[in-house]
Image 1 (cartoon, rainbow, N blue to C red):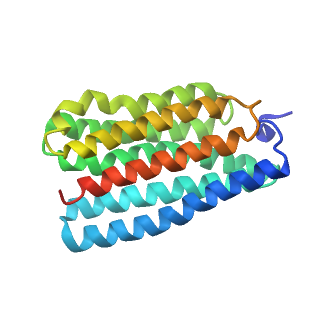
Image 2 (image 1 turned 120 degrees about the vertical axis):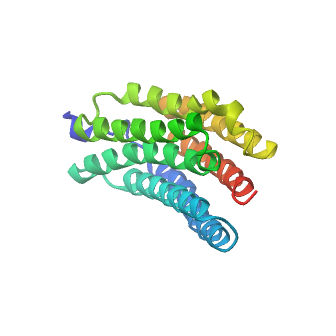
Length: 217
């Protein structure tokens, strides 16, 4: 089988339905939540926080939307392109999630460098995914995890600009994402894909809560 058609194991109908429900719930909640977040930021916060809210919101909806479309699409050549978009959108989501937190302390050179660096890595990952699809999947998983936990390097300075509850929620969301990776690679487990995406939706909800507590605080 050529690279274009490597989509993992075949999922039966009940697994696809479960995965579709998880995705559907995630997309609907994301659209509602992002709309509320941007409205709040527009009315009550600064221009920088408004921009950060838009970046985060678009990244969240893009990632969940691409994942829903790719996972529900039947196996075909089109699905191979959707796979690239889905995997690339994960890089966007990680960088976009960091943006509202790092924007708060962007006056600090170290935090600003972290903000620029996270987007440079995300763009690099997207280029790799689009240029070499299917060739570095396990490396990409490690890169996702490395990006996600790179915030540890800026934890001390960024904690000066964020409420303690925000820091706790950031860590909890990161742990949930990381734990979900176990199910992402455990392909023989029944409903493995739905479980993995369930972790993604819950982790995204936790990070959304973190963004809410950070914006305007």
